Length: 164
Image 1: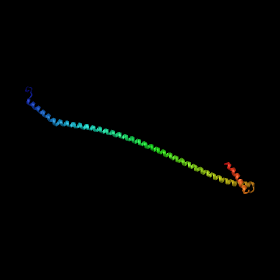
Image 2: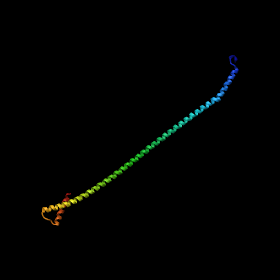
Image 3: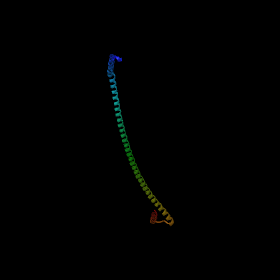
Image 4: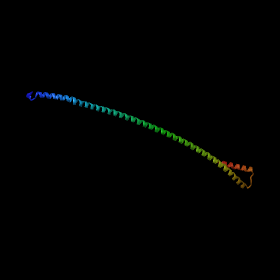
């Protein structure tokens, strides 16, 4: 090998040094680097798993929120419907009560008008009777007795009653 320019002792020491260097690098550099890479790989895997879990939790939270919003909307619609029904019922009761009160007022007014009409007719008959007696006494120019007066008044009242 010396003819080729290779010194066997030097070759042997280079191979030995290279082997020792490989063993040292294996234990002090390669294994720690592999361990570090494995730990990093595990952290990345855990981060991805956590991200997936968070995504699932967010999806479930979104679904829960949607369900709650839909339920709240349904509840609001039910409350609005109930309030509308209650308002309609109250309106009908108020209208019914108002109509009843209006009928009572009209009936009372009609009774009062009828009473006042009868009073006015009675008063008018009395005045007409007095006027009739006065006119009759002036026309006849004599005084009638009580019985004749009454008969004359009754005839006049009968005629005026037929006019009504």
